[in-house]
Length: 440
Image (tube, rainbow, N blue to C red; front, side):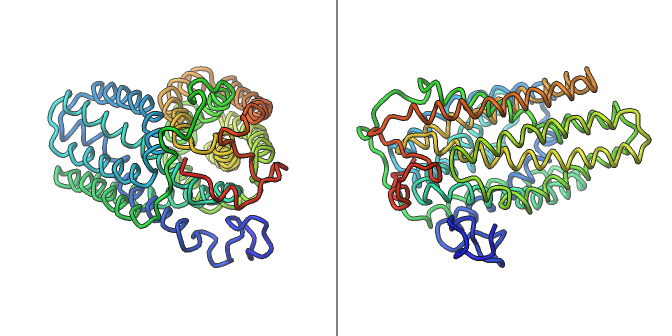
């Protein structure tokens, strides 16, 4: 990020020196405040939910896992229609309603005492969360010019990590107390955080909806080039459970490094994303720069996997140093891949359909969270060093394939249907035109 907006052709990347971690006043800062408000509650929820459902609700761990798997499967299916609803009925109103629905679902966890009520509540929760993510992206698209969205998304990612870190600390206090009241307080906090998120979103200006007759052409499910980009991004997202599952299992079962390093690497990742995500997103302004960033991330991820593999069999503190080096490379790959994928998700979607397309693109996160643990466990714990190298090789191949896939998706966008050429890609579209896009 440059120190002066006057020196940056992209205002979102050119915030003043004192605002490097805070977006400028207006809709950008309101969106960041909404992100912060619910991420604190989510952070507390994530670290306590498994023990709450098993120890307080009394469900067997296997049923909790099954219920959450089914629920996230349902959530991934409804993301597209809820995103389409945001496009056609208004992104702000839809986002507010889905934030309220999420709050209600979390609050219902306070009173569920059986598997079936838990499953219903979990399905409502995941559906509302998936739809809320798509509606927020449609809202962002309607309020922020095309060339500035990746910069803002980088700010939002940093805000998300900060909120999750604070929430995780509060959840840790509840875990330390270990009482039913402490767990209930965490879930109440998460419900309130989504109520606050809804209130903050109401401060945003309304964004015109596309309407039921404005958008023509096949839906996102028939847009094969965009589907291919989404599939490749899903492969790249398989690294999501790496620091929460893959590396911890690797450290404890394949290396002599101290077990507490698991926590240290997680803190390192969270802090690095908070500090460097905005900086890494500076140069990503269009399809071409996004695919370059993703290609670079593939090389860095391959190097990270190779370094992680070297920790096996080393002396404890040597292994620890190698693991830290691998984690630094991993977060460098993560921040570049994130910036590139955000840009592609917006630039390759037709105007007026961002909510629908973002709902589909977001299913990659759900798939990665579902399949990632299985893939990483098999590769890293089962295969060891060859598994690390295979993971890095697959990531590099997917990152290279993203270039031609994104170019084909860009070429397939049909003028006159609301398609907007990507900012910074030599399209010649004025910034004012992009800024006037309808929601979605």
